[in-house]
Length: 117
Length: 112
Image (cartoon, rainbow over all chains, first blue to last red; front, side, top):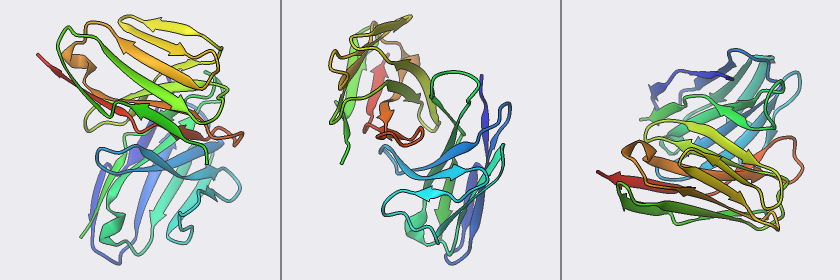
């Protein structure tokens, strides 16, 4: 089945610093990847859609200058949280669709737990 | 805006009891997907339903898609401790290139 990896799994950073999270599709090529944010005991909130070779599209209310997304290749998307603050602490999860199988389901990475101190 | 609502938010059952979670969309959906997220884990795809009135089974799990394609349910027969986790339904977000809108999820706990 389709496998998506995410790195790092956990990161602690100081307020004001930037953090980069990588999302990779390991056994398929993904022209589109999705970035979600999840608070404890809550649902997944779509932040943005990462498109290979073009700009990411952001959901309403998500600051594009704060959450920088780069889809550098067909297997890699990165999310950079710039000038992080404690309120950015959350669980960030990426997902991708495998165009070669299935009917549009998404395969999720293991997530990155970000703590900003 | 488009909404996907899921009830109940929490369900605590004794092992062996049945469990059902319900999903309702404010709009007609082309398909509905179900995911399971174990505690501390990430969502894992379970199934997709496409046809009106469709029913699919996976061992003890039964998934239904309503006739109007606006609601769905997941029923687990004779729960086991391995069923613990949060179950999410998700539907396509408009016609927007594969984006999904998720329900709030139902957290299932099973007492042995």
